Image (cartoon, rainbow, N blue to C red; front, side):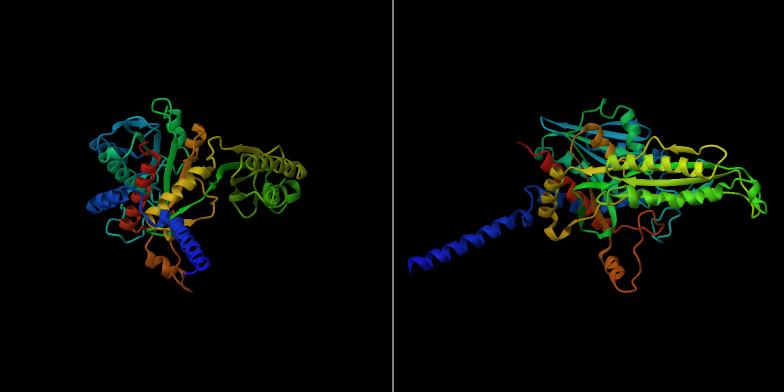
Length: 448
């Protein structure tokens, strides 16, 4: 063979080998995934039964007593040091396994005041009185039953395979996520003073748009700041037939609703994200009566602290100026809820590391980059308080066949989170969640 031809063939082979080598990390399993799969294969049906029990017995926010007791029992059984009643019904399980980083994994426990309409044999039939004394249905319509089961299964695997990792595991079962206050309650109760300070904070959330067997991720801002604002417009009541003798707060409030729409469209940098929604408008009791006041309830969403401040300051300014323009009886009453839900920021470095693990475990095609959402998640407070890398990734929960049907023209829409018909594909969702979470934990707690 001629030397030049040999050189060309050699370069070609080296190039092919290089391409193949670049693909290997995404197709070969991490060193311990086979153990995770074998362990889970033998126990998956039992964990699905745990999930079904949780699904059938949901508890409202701040009422998670039985769920917390189940979590505490399961963690104690596999060797964790367990502390209950942290910030309400919060549970913390610690497992120290030599020198190494501390990894916090969180799962939230509370259900929603929703009457279930899935038709499942293990559907919730729970009815309780809410804080107003009204009987309401209770349902795990946001997937927290998946979150708790995933947390327990991951914790059990890691406890039974301590030879594979080094460091400290901090398992946190959090109450009251749906109120946006469970994390702040646990932090206020000494979560990071009574227990080790984590080096990483990790969580997942089911997705109603992803097929079971898949995971999704966002690098950077992933969930939004969530603020609630109440505005009361003070007018002067009178007869509907003689509006000139009154000062109509409904007209003033209507102009304010329109003015508020300019905050995002004309004040916020178009490259930044923001939402101002008036979700409630109450005023008056009868056709021909001009009321003394009108009340607005707003939800305000943003990512950056600067945009959040700009929106809230703008709401205050517009409310006062509109009331002044319409000569209201007195300035508006404006109340911004103190305990807002901060935005979730997924640390880019940790996200990149996690994506590499997920691709290696599940296959590159099963790992999807997703868009940020304007939904809220109080998981954000942990990494923000600690100033450490945090990651909340998305776990596909929809039966693949149902997802395919929904994508056909005229196909049935998928139930969203908080829907009375939301029903995860339990076995496949849990199998994927545990493999993803356990392998990522092993990566972050890798032995030197």
